[in-house]
Length: 622
Ligand SMILES: Cc1ncc(C[n+]2csc(CCOP(=O)(O)OP(=O)(O)O)c2C)c(N)n1
Ligand SMILES: [Mg+2]
Image 1 (cartoon, rainbow, N blue to C red):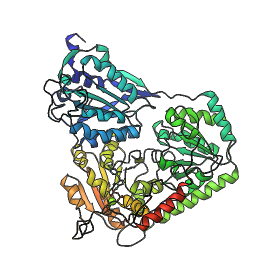
Image 2 (cartoon, rainbow, N blue to C red; image 1 turned 180 degrees about the vertical axis):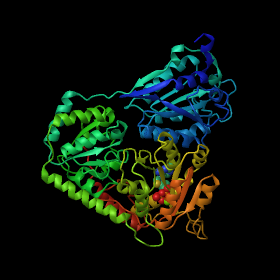
Image 3 (cartoon, helix red, strand yellow; image 1 turned 135 degrees about the horizontal axis):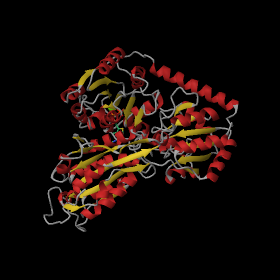
């Protein structure tokens, strides 16, 4: 590289750097950035936009329809790549930038790497205030991009070209760190993006970031093995870390050798095939009868790669035995110490291998093993019953899930994020292949589904992707259908229409409020939203964006629509009316949602009394 080659704009240097970054784990090495998503405005069109217009070859550019959605697409892409690849996202300043904040929070909470490049106000401050600039009265140093700080694992603002190299190195360190990863935000003032400078040629050399498989402390590992040997009723909680570490086979072997049952979190579901003898399915608020009963009496919980959210711990009521103790395998200290666990800070795969070796031929007692088998068989019967044809004019959501599950290939991926579907899918979806169950349930962000489906299919073009989305989530963010059509990405989207929020409607009833404000009804003469249904034509909406869209009311219509979608390219949308009142419900679990302490509504007072009683089971694990 000659001296004149190394003089370039900040934006050009950034793009060139991105194209040169590679990641390696085990024997797998690949480019870390699979492309750049972007929506241009005056805050990035002349800087990053110019640099992308003549970008290095291996970096494709994608034009989405909404900035929040593109971050979801990038996060889903990263999740479906087990965090070994991601996409960068560029936006203009102001609303384009803040639209990404929700996506950043979702990525960071789910521990998924995404690189966000919002434009920012002039570093020179000369033309201030520019279009879309927030004028913060007590500091000229603030912009709307400061909103990204708490939702980013690394945040920086590049006010001078000289700051770029160290910021990029920090960005990569965080993005490729299993423990620290999440959204990384580099705010780029629009004047700085276009400024030229000399950059050190080494910045653009191909660079390989190795993702380590750290091993836990030896003494802690020995102590953990002792605790497991001493346990009579151990259970494993498998979280997303099992999948990200590519440890499903290791976990399967560990569970088979020890006979310890495995309950899965939303992020961890699919760690074991549903029909493996040790799999007791979903655990927690949206868990199975089998997993929740075993959790209740467990004396030892081996947590693998989970952040133990309230949905997993049933708001700290799931593990009810007085003597219960925890051992937690996690790359992050933050998680490994939760519930006063004995922390095994390390990679899930190598730690399970070492723990398995330390346990030798130890396994659970035959009586416990047969109890596990009985509970598992009982749960599979329950699923069969919910999957079975029930008749009736409008389908239940559980039955629709069964139809899609039965139809889909073993390596198909179902994707979802919010509403009543996540709880039903967590319990009912029979996952057969790791990665086959993709739930964004860290942020449970309505609108993730279709944008996420796009990212999954981009990461895994050979797997069928089934987006299952409620009517509420669809109405919040369906526009990425147009992006999928543009990119010729094949997706099958099932819109489950129950005319509003079945999930929050049910919750509202449970807290004594009778579903207030959760139905899509027109305002009536009473002045309330209790008139005739709003009635959205979802098939017309999807078709208008280039999807093939059909309404499917009965079992046979859904099956025919799935077959048709499978045989087509592009986006197929199947709209299925579902009965909001035929819910699958919870299984021996509880979720802490505080009920009003005083109210004129008698139902609320009753709910409060029940709440106070239930809350007594909530405990500290110290
Ligand atoms: C962006 C966002 N806003 C609000 C919520 C709270 N919320 C959770 S589920 C839900 C309703 C979802 O409706 P729909 O997609 O129709 O699913 P259903 O509950 O009917 O199954 C709402 C409003 C959320 N999770 N995300
Ligand atoms: Mg709905």
